[in-house]
Image (tube, rainbow, N blue to C red; front, side):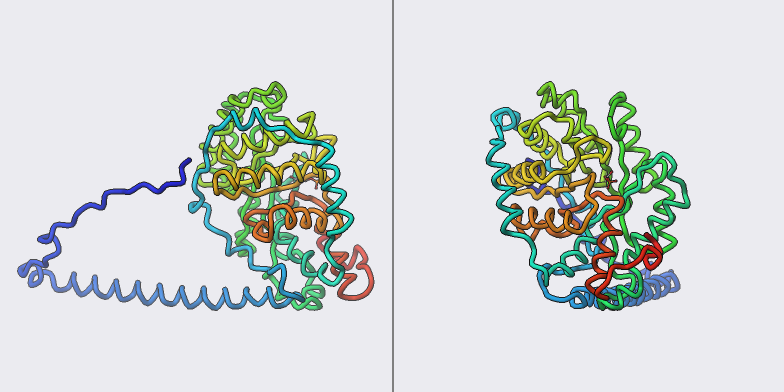
Length: 400
Ligand SMILES: O=C[C@H](O)COP(=O)(O)O
């Protein structure tokens, strides 16, 4: 494990180098004055920036009070930890992987139990739905994606709800954003530009490694990651090599994922398991462990292109793997269900799963994302219903 910090030797400063030579003082007074002025100016600028940031943070903090109730809290997405603070989380324990086995019937029972007795109460739904928006990776992954529809997606990510609705829910305009926008590598630059123009501090996620099938050479898959990172992607959604998982070649899968992790650099790596193609729950559990051991920041269910995508039993198995990994290593890896999540009811069920299996800590965008292209419209409609007592018409949702 790379958890320990390295004790770096601090270079010693020779005392003599700290002394200001008398003659230098006399010879270059102007330069010293200029340096002092520059330092004073820098301090003043830093103070101004700090004050500006404090005011912004204060404003944004109001969002948590704007939505009824206090649990779960809504905090602005741009308070996310910087990617550079993420430590590598590599470990290899293939014995653990090989010994793992999932009891299918127990999984079914647990999901039944979650669905029948633990759903979110109606009077908490507004705050949970508003919070779920912050966890959405708003996605477009279509062959005809182009700068204009990506710009539109960015606009929706930066302003997910109409002004009328944010006013009715007392959410200050512009403070609620999605967790990320997710696009193909060729559209990353468009997305970065679109968000920059809006002044939105939202990360761009890129699918990569031959998404959705991964059926190309490792070299090309790694180059694709590098291309997306170079274009500004802060999050990379890679697909795992299904052949290696299906043939139980966990060692080779681990090696490939480690290479991908390296290629991501400081960008987050989300590993898509393509669960619908892994045959059984035990394979999904094992692939989850391997992906986490190789340093994934998130494990993600699906590309949205398989026949079977995110289902609750599969989600439960992946959450249990995340929990086991956390208990063994102390690292918290995030979870991203994706594919076919389209309704407010779906998202509340996924949030219930997260809360019950992993706890409140995992209900922030640092550790929970929902990959979805159409979900936001349904959430908007439902919040509209809560605010006005009637469902919004399509024309009342201009960005839908
Ligand atoms: O990663 C995100 C998925 O591709 C989105 O799938 P969806 O279009 O079914 O919401």
